[in-house]
Amino acid sequence: MNSKIAELMPFVDFLGAALGSATEVVLHDLTEPGNSVVKIVNGHVSGRNVGAPATDFARAIVREYGDSNINFVTDYVSKTVDGRPLQGSSYFIRDEGKVVGMICVNIDPQPFRSLEDALNVFMEAYRHGGSEEYRDANLDAVRAAYSSSSVETLSLGVNDAGVVEQVRALMASMGKTPSELDQAGRMEVVRKLEETGAFLIKGAAADVACELHVSVPSIYRYLQKVRREG
Image 1 (cartoon, rainbow, N blue to C red):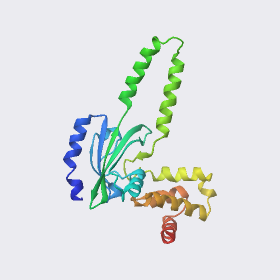
Image 2 (image 1 turned 120 degrees about the vertical axis):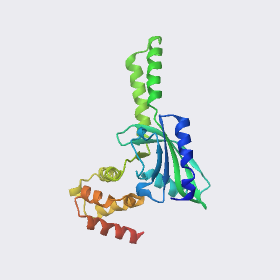
Image 3 (image 1 turned 135 degrees about the horizontal axis):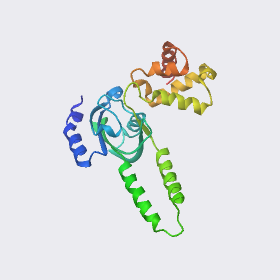
């Protein structure tokens, strides 16, 4: 583990204790993206443990901000594998200018939602011309917009690294089923996955092969061609 990352292990404990049990604090070692989580406090928020992989979003923001002077991003929406939205912020850990890790803070808004519901019920009782249906419709609209703005799914590990979800989303965007994809279509899926860093996850090639109904060697051939083409 990089020494810059190791030095922050106690700080993760501090943040977890200071921010409370509804806030997950995660330390990532991005030099090992397949099992980047090296420390996690309040992991029950997302269900993750040490050894979970980096998300596509984490890899993407490192590519975007790695050579900049930006040290953190805040106020984005992530989601758990069971679809619950979380409010996220990430701090970049640099070693000689290169981003080698991140501290991510993910807040579960559910306790605040429960309070919001209780307050709205109370206010609705004294609101002239209002209705419970009106209140519920507006709350549902806000929550739907919040959830749909999610930029990452917090993966639990190798068996749920988001690769299968990505393949299915790509095929849906192409309007194709696996049996309808020709070689060019399968190449395009592999190319898009390579751009997100999906093949850095151990076992990803086998997952992709299963979803595309081809052999694992075929996926590696496509991947080699994509990498040659740059």
